[in-house]
Image 1 (cartoon, rainbow, N blue to C red):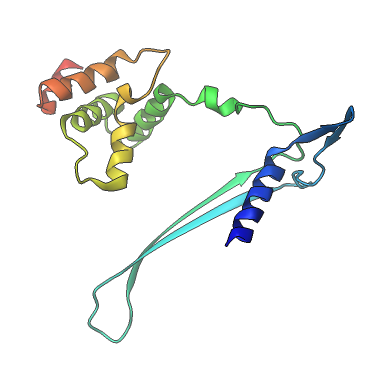
Image 2 (image 1 turned 90 degrees about the vertical axis):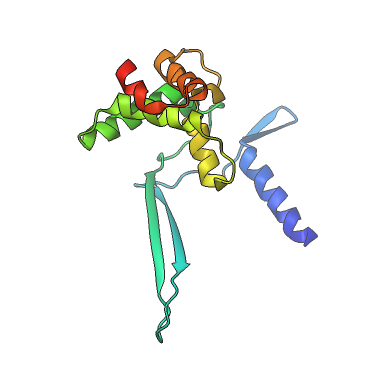
Length: 172
């Protein structure tokens, strides 16, 4: 078991080390370059839930999630922190949600404000991991923002104090 942990640590150190300086000579990590051509990485997650079936066959309900991402051609120097960390803010995510909700023909911002209000109205007691993640996502005060989101924060406060989120649509 210890040798397994040993290899994980070595692999992590190799990935972190972009370059090594020794005796004034700078050596770049030439092992972990991105491949040439049109490289991509794909991820596939499958969740299978067995159904209660009294027949002879085993029946499962399954959901498959697949994603493919293009990789750069060849990059040996990486910038830290990643550039995407500055671009993705809570307001950006909320704008994406509003746009997606509007694509279904529903007014996006009032719907999202009501969801934020309802998330603040109820506790996360016995909701599980998914409920906790949704609560964090729909709670604007759970992140530190340089850009104040007054509408979203007001919806959260209204849900905490008034406990009646159907009336929030009249305020928007």
